[in-house]
Length: 115
Length: 109
Image 1 (tube, rainbow over the protein chains, first blue to last red):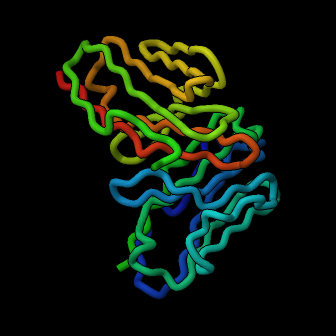
Image 2: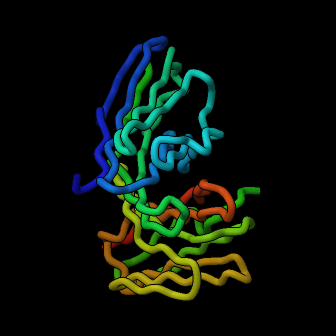
């Protein structure tokens, strides 16, 4: 696609439900990043993919969070048993080289609200 | 202490003013990015630097690797420049970007 596409753009869910967020990176981009931005806060790193593998999962806040990437393309971030503190904008970014020398392209984000 | 520090945190300027936003970092880096985030959340990459200086329109970015410091300058500022400007460093030997907390710029007409 022309840009990084994320869905849904907005998700309101009840505490305890599972949610799935999707990121469709720019075609050919090998690196894919998930970040989280809480209200008024900076960007918090969650996980990085190079191709289908995730060399760095250190940012995932708890074992309720998981992510996968298939076919070196689409990635899904799954949050199980959502809590109110999970409310944030979840941003996906992709780049061509994945080693910090390629421009980062961000999606518009998925705004998650846990009631 | 954050590994990436930006200053100022908030900045209000009059249209036409020259603006400087600073970023200091304490880790080894491969590259530094300047990003712009408009109200509504969309993030756009402005510059990627590993040395020297880059210019795009009214925006200029510089980096001093020895001093671990970068600056973003906006010449002849305009209300449409109002946004949050974020410095992000790509740390050497890892796959992680570390982000500054951003500088919120408001340019008044």
